[in-house]
Image (cartoon, rainbow over all chains, first blue to last red; front, side, top):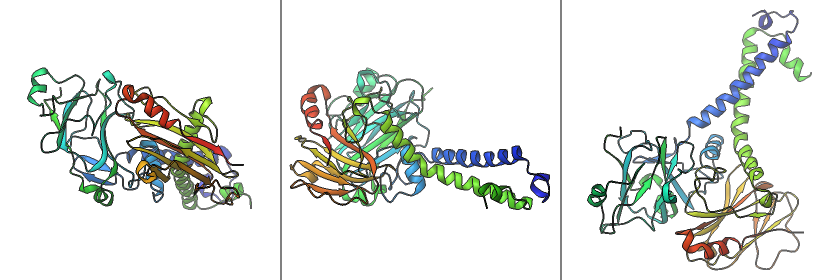
Length: 214
Length: 188
């Protein structure tokens, strides 16, 4: 206390340096923690999905720019592409790669779309057959223009696959091996102007957990 | 008065606490501001030797789970990159990817902002010919006929070309040829 309060005491350099070092460490550490804590948060939501309206934008604020750089580096601005991320299912339960999920919904109103599975480190799973995504080209659509596919560590059982098959064929499988954190990213390239103006208006795909997920 | 004397001058304890809090706050803001710059600089440095340096196009292999340079890579896109430094010298960007599907050329500042993007629809079949200049550099006297001038908000950054790929094995020849039309040429 004396070093902080006495006007005549000699400067105790080790204490002074330690205090300023602590302040700098506190500032740097809190910056990193705040940025990490904001990953996949903020922005607007549509069902289980969230998107940042400022990703890639030259109008992004200090924190948004840092969060995008850490979590979605080199994102395009939303006039070109809208990115939605889901880290929980439609019931709000955190996604896990060991669980089985069915993703379904109307084809998004965009020129091209895809759903990609990422592990908690935000990189692709080592998926069998290099099946990393389901997209507008390979997703089977029913007569109403709705897609449906399953994810999980193993392929759907034959009976389940037949039961959930669509007129376009059996439900495709997006592998999510192991027991890890999981997120899905829905990319809409050249989205409809209504979605650019109001990303929350997306008819969000449902993420339905199948089974108990032991 | 030197910075050291300013920092260590005798003051009441609560003033010292406030000074330390200001130092912590400024450090916090500085780190948040610097994160995108640091990540973009690290990305440029992480390119293999053959693709490193301003104006050198790099064509990474098709994205798969072994790609660990950029978070959340799209497995449906084939990429080409080219880092730029237009503080002293303009950069001519040319490409002519004759593909029926989506492709785009996006320009990012050193702070990771996407300040320009051109896609196949906007290009409308016309070959891409851009001249990229820095925020303070004068326009080059000899701009190639038909080239479009783009002014970058900062001197350095990265170009990222995306080519949509449905089935790489089947479309390999067409998409590889398309992305390899990218040229990044410093303008004298």
